Image (cartoon, one colour):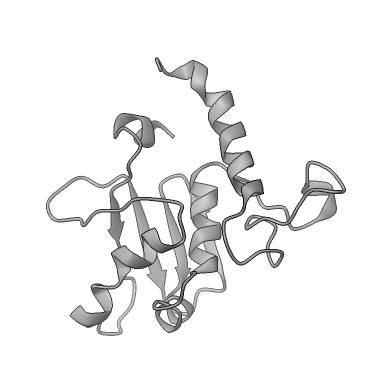
Length: 148
């Protein structure tokens, strides 16, 4: 969250290409739109600017991993779905970047009637009001660290 506060609510992404496969300019030009389309974040290019988080498409990766410093996702899945309305795995992993946990099992969920959300894998393919509620909750607990 520190990088979001420092940048007045924006994130600068850097895409780390972790593959021996050649990346075409045509495909690379789609990355920024793919990151903004799902509704989690604003992005900008890495042209000599410092970046806050990275997106790392990784060949052969099973699923993805999300951290506060970036996301690693399956390269093949990302490229196959880059023109789709939603990149569900990327959006889910970005949720982890905001501090949201996985809700795969019932005992990980806040309650038995917890609604569908992106962080409850398989229950929603898009960011939901429940995801927004969880993000607001994270921000509520972090707000005392900042002067706003």
